[in-house]
Length: 434
Image (tube, rainbow, N blue to C red):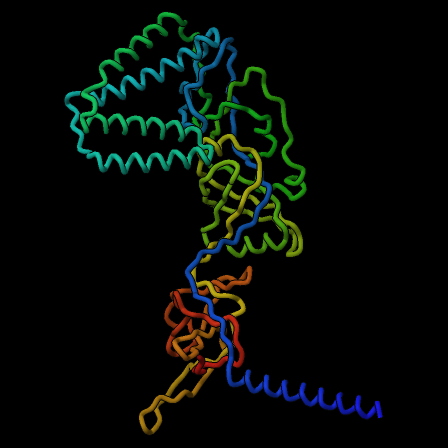
């Protein structure tokens, strides 16, 4: 008796489950829930981060004159052969006084130019306000990027603009009192401190750097293209710094970054070498992007690591003093329409049409292509796409294909702000949806 009841209950449960399954399938066929995502325009970069070493042709500057140095140049400044690099003073007080006198003289000349009767100021308060705001933003960017030379330059520019604004708005009639006070300070310093004992000059033309680190000759500049993976991995070897060294000159504008790349990264770099769009980012050195002019890759086979040499010729003060650190190699940049990788499907497009006897266009040839379904009102439309880059769950599609690149006869592709279907079932071109 009990077994019969159990059998009946099991039969009823199975029948209910079967009815629920049939009802679900019928509902799914009759109504498909769609989830869409708006297509947007974006830029994605293919970047690899490595540890790199800078190789430059560098000539030490030496001086046997005893005393305290006061440098005449900033880091990375250009200097001619025989040009003055520094002045030598008897003590630190004299050297510091000379630096202070240079600042005082610069401020005096700036204020005198604003006070000159012949000056005519074409600027208006409004244009000056915009310029002050822009220079202030630039100054803040330089502070964040630790571009200390630029910080001082922007600081002086801001001071000049604010003084100029006071003159043209007649908040002040001149700076005679300030100039007189600065001249008094200048005369006091000139009378109380000794002058230079001599000058240090550049042994060659190039870019000036005030410090030696001992790695100036660790990698051969002329033989940099012959470096092996093992040599780069071992790193540069520090040499002895001369006791009388006072700085160095980077004598060639071209410099090199050497590094080791994995097999996959080296293959990707090789594939992009002809694009002329490869650049470097050095986040702990400068906030500027550095273009790469030439590349050498030494890779034994497709599965081995590669010794990579990247040639550059852009220089600033921060780059002139850098020796090694993390470097981002931007191997490629892709701009286009971004869609979710989940939205891509293989679909049929018409590649050829002919007119029938009634004059109607009839498809005579189709081809399977990669594309997405886009919702227009209550209808789905299949659009062909041309992928430029796939990664991180997204596909970057070419926004403006050249004529003939698309296979579909109407030459339509995904466009900005299209509502692209990322979730849905039973998708096809022309399907009516709610």
